[in-house]
Image (cartoon, rainbow, N blue to C red; front, side, top):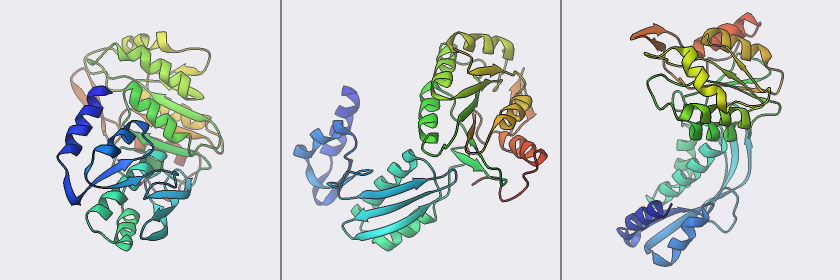
Length: 282
């Protein structure tokens, strides 16, 4: 953290003059030490700290959007933002600060936010009219799974059901950590294959197992069957997270890439359950 803050301070030291701006997140206590060292103007933002220049008075998360009241020095607007989750909202507030620092007016800032599209493979919602959320995300490390689950809890009314695996020919040390995070953060986890590459999926799963605990998991090596199982487990208000592959349209096994797409697989299962409406995601 010390090196990180030192790098931030070095960057801020290069910003000089009243027409130059630093945009600072007040929700990070470590950043407050910078306020006495500015050689420039600054704009602060926060999720709900009303001492910031930019903040929210209320916000509502759902699987496919965030609705929030944006408070700025130039006025208040209600924004319908198509990127769900608290982390996306915080990033949006930072973007608002950057917009003001660049001289963009409030109306165009709001227009830009409302025209934003989700990044493919990142927290993409699949909506076929089912009474539970299904989300596809690329998260494939312990830290990324943790942040994904934390963001999902903002929208979950019921259980958080997580599907995950670990890639082959990659860091074996993270595998038990993935199991630990999954069974800590989610209400139930399904362990499956990812891209085993030149390893056997069963061996990778064995490396994950020491981190799993209690009875909050099931092991289903076949990813297609795992997706079908976890979606069939979902009840109204639950959130199903399909993590690890995002927009990848293949599984890499023993040097070959076989067609496989989490989104298409999920839609097929939902259609089999009788849900055939709306959209394939964001």
